[in-house]
Length: 90
Image (cartoon, rainbow, N blue to C red):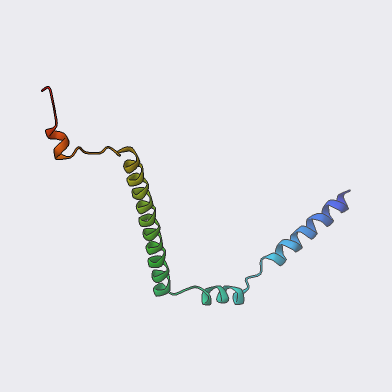
């Protein structure tokens, strides 16, 4: 039983030691593939413009809906001058 525990601990130690490999090629590739500051600024500006355009479109849609609802509610006809003058009994 002690041999099995010793063998498992040895295998785990070897596996852990194998994982502690600093691969500089992977680190350098990750650094090379990072966008520059100007590119990040351009992407951020584009995202901000897209968000502003989407919000403006949503606001315009909301305003159009409100106008349509108000137009449907307020369909009263104003009397003409002739109708206003034709008041009898006052």
